[in-house]
Length: 313
Length: 96
Image (cartoon, rainbow over all chains, first blue to last red; front, top):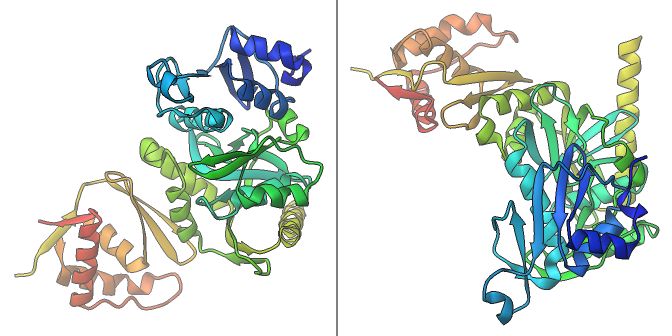
């Protein structure tokens, strides 16, 4: 039987994390994490409770979060992110340890998983209707994604959509959803039962808190998704939900702009992107209310079901 | 004498067609460009060798009946020169 993070008592988990470290399986990636920092232990134990503990002898990424190993540690309390013993980032204030872990995990995938075209996008799915939500920061992508996954949509990723360059499927990487500033209270109100971690203030992105991913999404971490739609979301106060078709050539350009490793993959990246555009419809989506947005996305699922019925007939 | 143009590099572009627009992927720069059917016809013509704006205008006129929607492709020499300059800025073509 697979051990889950949440199957360990909080104290035991914190001790293991600070000593030998623990290996957590997120999607197809196993990450060894070591940290003596309490907020990291609490955040992992709470928000990753449903994730499996992987084989301790193998990990794709080896990371740790600790106080910097320099004189700086005596001047101001800070946290440093270590990747294979190296420090890819400048240290951050100690209170930002858990957000730094999340950013660091994203960095590991975005910089190393080049068998995928990695889109800065959320990826969700319901009843076989896979949707990619690419968007720049501030567009309301994570808020929309959080709202949808609290209403039965499956979370594949909030931040990094992994498009397999061989077969065009999206590989799941369901991890906590990063909520920023006003979105934190918006989701608390929208989904009162959702588990949201502590708010960390004054980060480079403002106030940050993380939503625990639905257990049903974590359990399905081995099931890939075939995208049916690309939706570019934009939140606008007071705006009625409106879905507008985007010409696919324009959609292709915007997808490329949101792909972290498009220049790294070169022609393979273009072919993967073109295959996805061939098989999907692209839309702009403006919304001012999460309830309206839920309704619009339910319409996408119905449309997809109708299309499938037509094909099978 | 009119300037002759050629592809910046042989086999350096890949094109895809969606709706009524084309996307050109420049393998050398990694850039994508949305272009219309006329630009694609110019690039296809230049794949066969260098040509100047007059040759290209003639090639567009010959290709016109082949347009799928039956529309005529129009291109004056000055239009084509402007298109070539724009494609030069995107490292798709260059003067010989």
